[in-house]
Length: 488
Ligand code: SAH
Image (cartoon, rainbow, N blue to C red; front, side):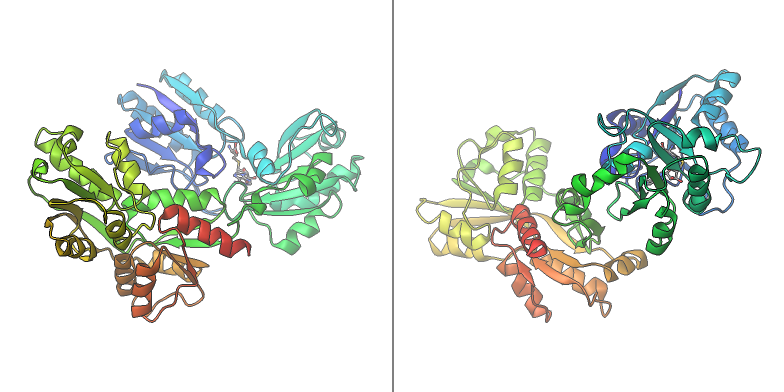
């Protein structure tokens, strides 16, 4: 079997390579460091053995020989092994040493490069490490060594003369000494300089100055590891090319309270706009067992959420049926997310209301002759739609496909919520469950964003007023409302 030496990128999970994700998904054993994206292991197999080999803030780490031993033993045992490292495994990652150890032991290995922090951190700070007018070369340097040491492996005088950008890894603590050494070697003290802390992550911070001032600027800003220093004319380009901090939700911590299974779409949208997302699901979706409905009996089938679509098709599938079962009925979706879920299964909804609420669907169905309707939805949903259709003389069956149950919030989630700038609510049931889960620990400083009037009313019942209410009652609308509020 093969041991894969895999780079996990600098922190932004979007910078994990496709190959890295594929291998993480197959691995039986994953030996990982601390500086890997928090979600990097989310796709690992449930039965994968995860071994932490990093060190915690200068504390003891697993000895390199022990890590080598682990990789060799698991490799020899015929297991598929991923050795997952921050950034690129061969850039200050000891990947070279591990490859040598594997080679010496006769264990096959492959290397999967990663996006190295020395390129990505500056890029997210608006600093291109090379530029036709400003730098035709770039040097990656470890600042781990004490530059005052005479036997230093680095020739700081030569580095001072290096005709291009200097990127220093692991050097925050020795920054002052490094800058002095470079200036003593003849480097221009007025050369632009930048420090990038936690580059590519939502918490990214950048300090700027010159080679002569950057150590003091970094100390004043409280920049700490993991951070990189960039010295060179390119650092001055940040002023014009800065982009990361300009995204509409940059710097905001936004809590997502929907069920974990539904959260990913909203979370991804928020992250994409620069928010730091706190996932605090107080609710969980449990599917209910039951037979497939006799769809042929109905001239209207209403589906009230993407989950409803998924579970309806699961029931149909279990009975050997597919989308054709819906051929004789009109299909109504409560909103565009539900319509998309239907389309993915080959069904184009006949009716999607303009307002994505049960009331909107009632209006949209007003002119349709309906004799028998099936409403596929959550067990405890409001009865607006069935009542209205019955009121028009239709025979209505409600098919409860799932129910939502409470999911307790842990201490870590509650602590994270205390720092939230916004709490988002996407249904009245999330409001109810969330309020029960936080009890008297409701985050006081956070503003509240609601997907629409029904959710806002549920908030009001708990004594809360939505600061932001979406005008379009779906995820896109909620995100748009947040962006509008944040950029106002
Ligand atoms: N193999 C890694 C580097 C490991 S050395 C890579 O290719 O990126 C660890 C050092 O990398 C840290 O001390 C810091 O200088 C730098 N580093 C790693 N992640 C970083 C990040 N997100 N932002 C800034 N610097 C980072």
